Image (tube, rainbow, N blue to C red; front, side, top):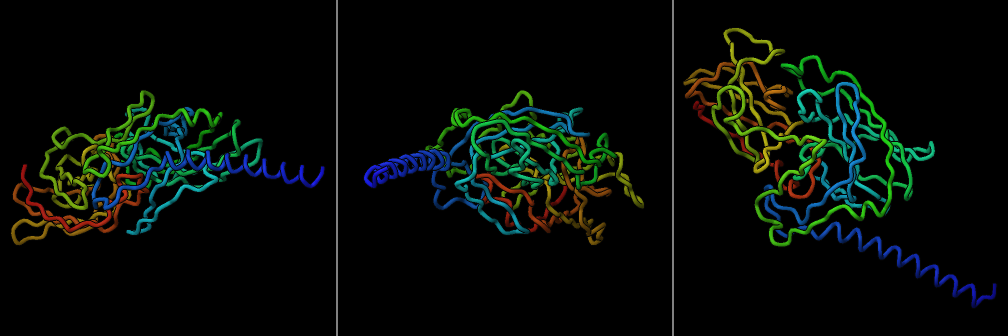
Length: 356
């Protein structure tokens, strides 16, 4: 090849490569619009909503697992009480997500021990990595991460779900204690990814509020009932950090040991505003007083129950007129999608006079 031909060929190749990069850049930029300036320290409407592609569902021990994916996402992880932004990398192909639930009650199981391995032709591309426990406005509680694939083709995705870290009660007692695993076949095509729905929310972005939960026929969404529809007696609701803390008195669920004269159970059910999503993986303590007498001052136990959902509880006998102080000792250790990253980080102590 003559030097002129070589240079011409090189220039053409470079132009083609840059065109491909520009195409990818335009695609990524379009899927990640600029963040809203002066975002409130609260739940707000994000810049956009998007759909997802279903890979499939499978049984994994006590669990049912759904594997889905969408465009690569920016998201924020939480380290103790510090927020860390995870940017989209040039190698990221998809945002891989799992939803885990109990097939008997269709209750989503918050779990911080979900790992995955992605293989192609026997070669591991994403090996044994823990997915982030996450919360998003359209999917609620799930686990996910951005993943780099090696172009279009067929991939094997292994999902391993560990035991639930919370105490399990009621019909969940002695369940979710073993590791479950499932393998999915992911037939990935870039064209399929590009066909996933995407909608900008220019007229609402940055406003206080949230988008509606995604409607999925095959997969449940973690969502708590209104306080009046929960078991037992609603004693009040406290607010802090833009979260709602619903206080309930119920009969002790099976699996809760009562002590002394306590024959009831105090449950605190934290949830997001607007969509009532649970806020797991946090640490709460409480102090209950009746007049001059302190009835208890202690940490509450993370508990997962089919009727009360994921909550924080203790065997106790709260009564009308009692004063309850609630302290968030550790914020929810959940990665957040856009719209949740500014909330649930700074909590004032809460004081509530109980009333049935």
